[in-house]
Length: 198
Image 1: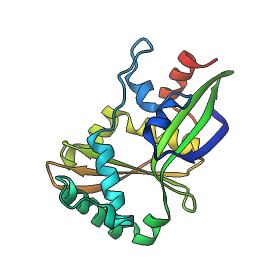
Image 2: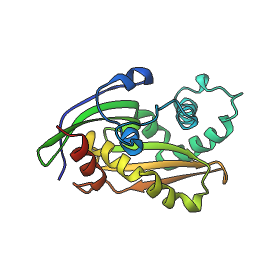
Image 3: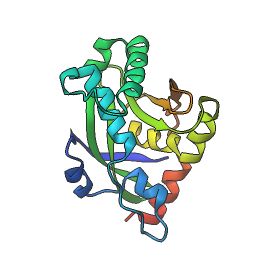
């Protein structure tokens, strides 16, 4: 079983500052080969998530001339119909955290950056934009290790539930996928702690 200690939560709107914070991110742990992983840049998915957030919470900041505006509006529509506007607005955006994962006496610093977090509902929400079709999303979740990512995020901030919100560019459709984060163990993180823990 993995235990979590010394968790700190903070606003992480400045991504460059977040990158400097000590700790292994899920994206690093997933991509590393021999301790080296490619740099993480602000991707289309990150920009897309920001656009959705702007449409819902700060519409005057949403660039309606952007190529991604119409697609982001579709996700915003799904969010409001699924959660309700008040729920989404109360969620914290771009919440960062650091924690220490402990397994078999080894401790590994871990960090994450949550798209959305509901303290009241104890829920982590992550936005994903994809070229995959809706029918292929379960395969994509397994291939990309999203279950591991959401497990680490949820345990790190003591959330009880996790959701992925996908927008399929090919199907022009937004879909909500619940992720089970109830298990106390996770093989992916156990292996990484054995590699990187002290």
